[in-house]
Image (cartoon, rainbow, N blue to C red; front, side):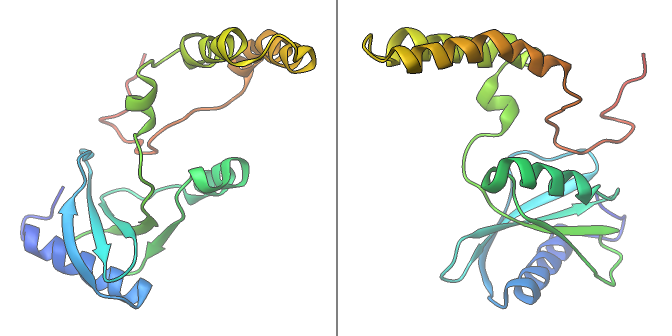
Amino acid sequence: MSAPSSSESDFIDLARAVVHAHCNTPSVSCRLHDEQGYFSKTYIMKLEGKSDVIVQFRETPLDLSLYDVSAEKLGALVPTIEKKSTNTSVSKHVYIMNYIDGSMWDYALGAWPGVVDSYIIPRLQTVLRENIPSDRLELRRSVEELISIVPNLKNLPLSLSHVDLNATNVSKP
């Protein structure tokens, strides 16, 4: 992703400026995130004396309302995200978000689609089999009840997504 006249150093310079303006702290390093989208460029910026932040340059806007709903339901598992205004030809849309260490969902679960059957239910069964002492009948019943109702999750209009919906990432039936 890049306008023809934009170089890597243009993106890095803009990322540093966005971080400094947003956090009021200079960055000490900048590196490309391991995962890059087709229509975005994502950097991890290390701040002086603070944690990392993400700066993402995008060709298309993000629907930030999806992040609001996710953050309301999942709390700190969802990064905070803010669109930044820039007067530059480097990128149409610039976002800054807090960095959350860990694996991305698709790598952590390794089971798309069918996460309920291939991940949630087996994990609950393992908890039931290996982690609940035999004298904890009430806890055992609670986990058994969860196992019996968790298939209902498949009926929810829920999707875990990187929210990079564009012509390349959506196929038509």
